[in-house]
Image (cartoon, rainbow over the protein chains, first blue to last red):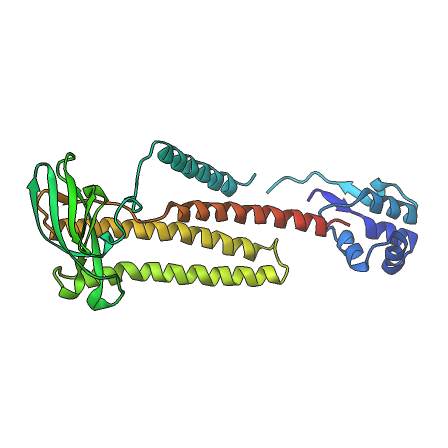
Length: 71
Length: 236
């Protein structure tokens, strides 16, 4: 997929653990792990809002678009 | 819409339209039984036939009932008159006389007396695929129900079971159809009836094809449901 999730980079910058972030945004650690590895199909605006609030960042800091040729 | 769903729904529409059109214009694919005397299926054998004023007199003897064992098994021959103006008068059916159109009559040959060579062999060769398909369908339905009872509805296995069952139902119709063709050819080559000829009629029920195609469509809907469920599950 062309959308890259940079959540782990932001988490390292903010020095926050997965467990703490998961608790703050109200999702399970397993789902957070899926989100970090980019294995999810979609992210709810409410989840994105909570992540941005917890990490004090913009959605663009977490999500990145990279144009990759198909095939 | 996925490609398979398009094909299956197109075929379904085609078959249903065909059935509606043929029933609207009253094209019969099987002889109507309701207008015949109830005992006509139990006629044992045609002893002789003769022409009297455009009416066929088919002298028959009453077999006394239909039973499934090899010595008492009857093979139906569906016949039609060589001339369409003739009618058939069935006589001595349970000591009563009935007037029945010839094209509604099946003549039954007792295989126990073995008047036709290899008839039993033909029966078993054509019966085995039907039995296998039937058992296969029952097993698939059993697996399908077990999966549903576990609560797994939108999973690929359920779709697979439904798709296979759909194909098998269609295959069942095809097998019956082939059997009827084979049987009609066999009878036409072995049976001679003066003034009558053996006709081909498929005994396959169109509902097998309709329900088969219906299951194929449902299987593809299950696949779409599975994709939607995955989307929901993988949304955080």
